[in-house]
Length: 268
Image (tube, rainbow, N blue to C red; front, side, top):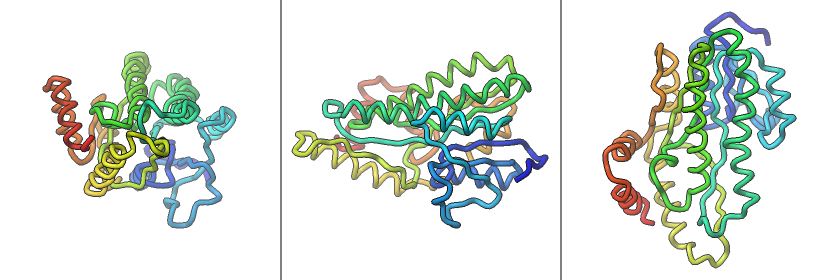
């Protein structure tokens, strides 16, 4: 597929479903040349594919996979770091190898890809990097410690990166979804017979219920497109059911009060 002269070239990770698929579709409809990634494009059905989007394999747990992708897609004008995995379970029982694997995808793999594409943006004096964070990193919730920590690390990195590259014409923004109606997987790391099991189940049921009542992935795609239309996009954009309310509470209420609201909301 040849590059077409349009709005630019975009790379969206995790583009085979959910938010990534919605973002890739919105960009393609707006005239971008879009490459989307997933673990194995050969296994994508016709329904999974967005017309006009080129799919390439990406496994964030393998350095060689990230480097191969970088070689194939350069130059990129827009990078949407969306791919991620989730987990639920008590901190006390978390298997350290699984925690490391989560960070390898949500943080270190994303970092490696971003590092590989920034030099080209800097050389051309233009580019946009959007990180899909999560309100889970901003609003405390029991049993999601490591997913929240990985997304919190992404936001901290994005805030520093924004200051580092703005003089080179590169824009950096974080979009933080919350309670979006998708099938985002969440690995349960609770041990059999765990004293936390009942509480984990309550939190998960409430989480699932709130997600299904929330807006679809298109709401996040709309937020991304809105950011791209701004000369100076906001550094942080919450999206989803109660996301803006949560952002307001975090800014204006004592931390103890915010934690109490979370405990009541998620029945933890």
